[in-house]
Amino acid sequence: MTASLKEERYKSSQWKAVRERVLWDFPVCAYCEYVAQSNPSTQVDHITKASEHDGDFYDLDNLVGCCGSCHSKKTSYELHGVRHATVKGWGKHFFNKWRDKVKGL
Ligand SMILES: [Zn+2]
Image (cartoon, rainbow, N blue to C red; front, side):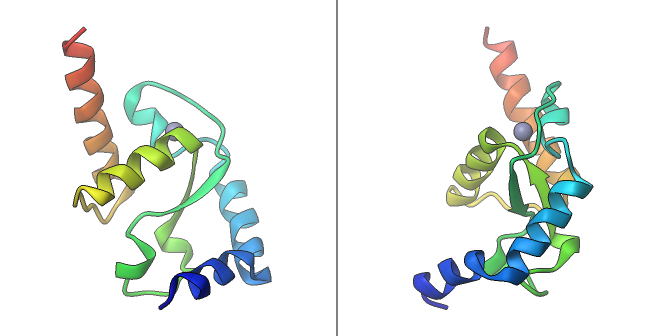
């Protein structure tokens, strides 16, 4: 799949409907709670990277709402090769990183 096709999917009416649904289902960031925070969801995250997920791009089972900060952290972890198939798996990763930081203070 080319980059431009991927971009197109985010503009599709199907994605817009799915995005609304996910933000409705997850009004609060799915990852923040693992680092003792709570922020409103403003973005929709593919738990398993869309390009590596067996199911559909629009598969609700692979989508959660999250805040911009967690989304960019998670994208950065993924760029470094971290993979988790569940929110809980990612939550533990976020927690461990957060705990290391807190211990270092
Ligand atoms: Zn968050």
